[in-house]
Image (cartoon, rainbow, N blue to C red; front, top):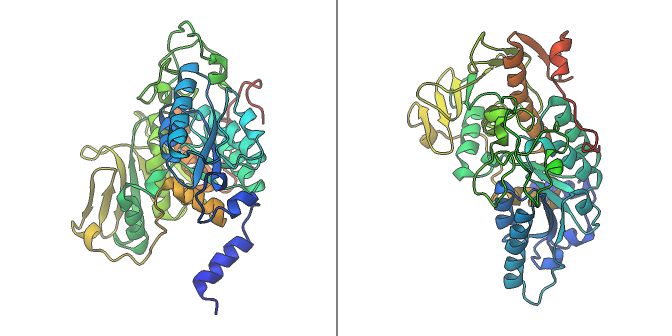
Length: 427
């Protein structure tokens, strides 16, 4: 007899929206190296190196290559991966690493199943689109895009090529489940009718004004810039060593959407998830007359999403309802009424994967959408971009979340995309 669970499992495979390599189908339950999911890392800097540490220790994955533009990080990453596999796969099949400066060479490998993109943000769009066209599954760090139009092109490429995409918004799957639990409570009515969400993150980006320095030997600076405007090297943007900090390119608009998008991609994401709004966005953007906080985005159902810290809460997401409030961050977590987060029996139970990588790998096998699927990643990045556009124009804007266009506003619509260097934007 077929029960509901087995039926859904069978249906998931029957309707899986992509064709998996035969070695992956045989890999279910088999952790031998030749049956693991082959993954290449694009950009093993601070974040990419952290992903490498985790993936080489995951029995269901195998890191088979990487792309890096700095020789010092190339050598370090090579040693990190080869040392692990030489010690932990003695006598077993591991073909070694494909190492390159140009990630497109990785995509030519027919045995490659997936890529993990951990470059600076200005490289996410092209790398995702080209990987999807090559039928490689994608894990891309957040925020996934620089502009609204770029994000939509990424979504289209992922869907058209039927690959599995996971946004690096690991608050949905990790951190002890506190974000998932908060979302379950909000959606279940724990705070009554949801009225307002405040996302407590930093402000917009600034134009890059760093002085030009001599480009160190062993760094392909033109490749680091890629589709971004031409400018002189500065190690604040691209460190000349194996660094253990987050480089400050995140501050500058040429490469990122500022602190607003850096952590906002995490905390706006929890707001979107709590509203069950992964496929939509606001209809109105209302910036303050001055200052870089308290911009409002209004949804069709009347819920307000507000950007900026409060005097007593400087990080994370706050949900305000008619009957209570929940504050959630990676550290602090509290509610009013005080016992709500401990005692409320949420009617909704969301999937709880082992971790963010395993959720991605699970979905490569099953054909299900990951917890932070591409549409969710795009809609969250869009919120950050809408905030920045609002702060730049300083006037009320009407937005169509279906068409992803501002209504009767050509000036605002020009800001939904940007020019790129054609030499490096190869899509």
